[in-house]
Length: 90
Image 1 (cartoon, rainbow, N blue to C red):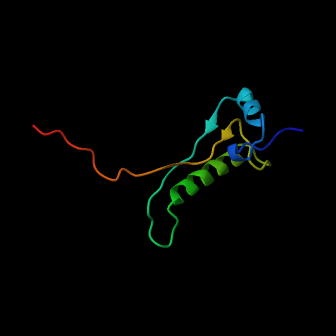
Image 2: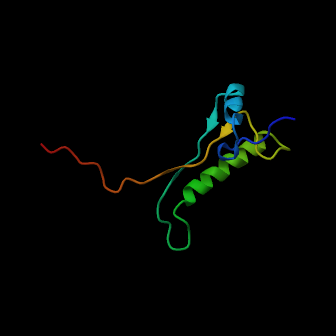
């Protein structure tokens, strides 16, 4: 039976290493953690990035739940720079 699960967080034991041996490539969704108002979650950008990668992986291999030639990593949350970088003074 062919392994079809490729979401990093759902792999067990050596499954990740088997996938890496098969194709050493991973999709890494990135999403900034920022306030979107009181009606949306802080991690909305990351949720959208993960959904886009999931959809692309599904469309690349029609008929399967989430497969492609690579692993789909968990979303990497990032934070906005709270202050502008200092500028050089003469």
